[in-house]
Structures are given as C-alpha cells and as structure tokens.
Image (cartoon, rainbow, N blue to C red):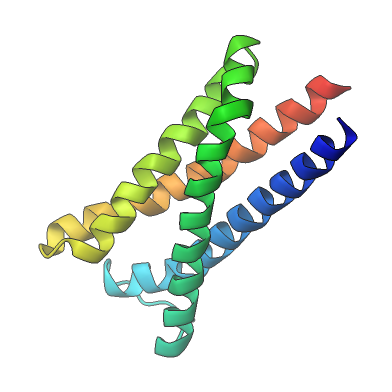
Length: 146
C-alpha cells in the first residue's frame, strides 16, 4: 500500500505541475488576446517567439492534463462520486477541462473572426473559472482530510 501511495503522490504532483503550467501560460497570453482580438491597447505582451513557446507549453500541458484526467476518472472521480464528496467543484473541473479542450481546438481551426473571438473569450473565461474551481476543490479536499 505504501508503494501505491508513493505513486499517488507523484501522480498528483504531476497533475498540479501541468495545471500550473497551463494556468501561467494561459495568463501570459491574455494581453495578446486583448490586443489582437479586442483591439485594446496593452502596455506589454509576448513577442512572436515568446508567444510560440508559451502556446506550445500551454498545449502540451493541456494534453497531458487530459491524459491525467482519464486516469483520475478510473479512481479519484469514481470514488469521490460514490462517497458524495466535492461533487460540485469536481464536476465543474472535469466538464470545464473538456470544454476548454474543444474551445482550444476551435481557437486553432475556426476561420470566422467572430467565432474566433467568442471562442477565445469563452476559453479564457472558462480557464480562469477552472482555476478558481480547482483551487476550491483542492481546499475542500485538504479541509476534509483534517
């Protein structure tokens, strides 16, 4: 059992790392969204090469987080659902990750400017809401263990 617990800690550490990379890289791209999509004047934004690397890390971390979500489904989500623990925040986190994956693909493939704008705004708003919900989910979990 101890061995399994060690793997669990590695898993959750990896999940936290990829979520943190996704959140930080997503926040770094907000000024670009404001300038290019909303035509707002911003004091700072990423340069072209910085943006490319940031988007690359964002996408890679997001793909890894979706893979880890599949692993979470097998144990963590099913057990939490049966125990009726943190259903609201957990459900919101899971659904928002899936919707962000869909809107993320839409950001790349949609050709209509209006659709790109609304997809970018939805993706960004949902990403910020996910961050808050995930932190609450984590806080609920820590508090319920005490």
